Length: 197
Image (cartoon, rainbow, N blue to C red; front, side):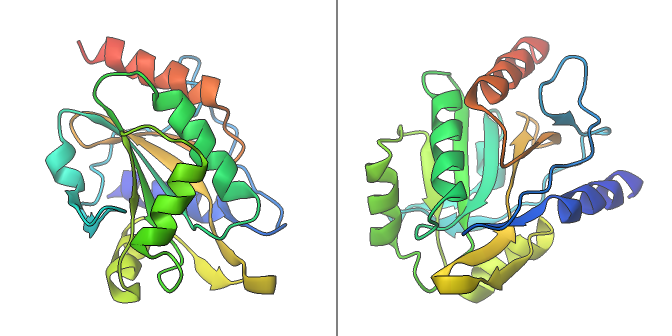
């Protein structure tokens, strides 16, 4: 319980907005091995199930045995979200057993077609799924992952902008803020794969 509460505090601190809002990084407690912020205790990641950009049903718990990067984006974001998507795709590209799940924070505009266009524009790999749904469906996931979502200026959405690295057993292991580089995430994915053997 303590680990889950501590993670919630970190995630609230990590809240940031797209569309020009300043990014706030998590506390600087990075591990000497992981490049991101290592989460002590390996808290089980809350399960969820949503449809992807192709209408396929994706359940997080069904991905046990794979390493999963979970982030929160929206297709009309003018700045931060496209960078996060590109960095995560670059990090995961060509690595076996890695999946990227981007959960929408803009249910009204993030239609399957908009999600497909967003991913196509960034030429992401097949391991990248953009998950959409109704506000009620998505809000359950936002609450479980401590995601703050508010309307921003000029059609933007202010939201928590972080990525979680979830191991093959479904445990939250590493946290990244929106500034995380592809090389750092890829390093951690490889390290996690080595330590899981």
